[in-house]
Image (cartoon, rainbow, N blue to C red; front, side, top):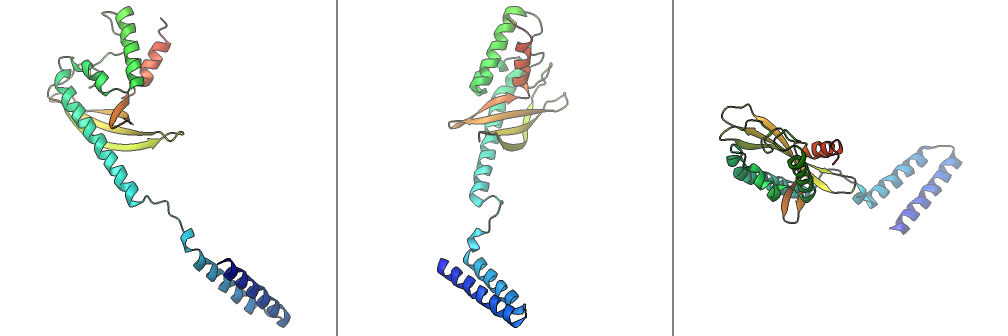
Length: 203
């Protein structure tokens, strides 16, 4: 391939020299075009595209489906008990390790210093409502994926919760893969809320 390119360049220079000697530029332009065409034909594989491949699309669709299933399965277990304020027992099952550590830290602080008073959370956690409704249904409205600067991927889902009486609520859930399952790393912004709360309530 290199020999062919060198040969074409040599022919180009030769034709250009002949064109200069005859006082015309037509032959030079024609030879330049010929070389350009030949080089493009030699390297057709250099053309690239930013469009995702079929495999990438299939993988993304599979991940989105698994996130939706995880959330719907979770809410099917959690929502029936929130009206009686029994949803907290499922927090260790679905929260990631870091978020669970923060929750336990805040809960311990409130039990110690704010027993019987409003602490970090002034509403039921799963529904983010002070008066959880009955017969709440969950609908996953959207799922998207983000990658941080260390190439760690997160899923961000918007979930619509609607009961019999209260207006619908949109909950934003951030998740990451932990082995073969998904875990929650933030639930409607409570991660930053807990960190801010503890920073302003020194022990």
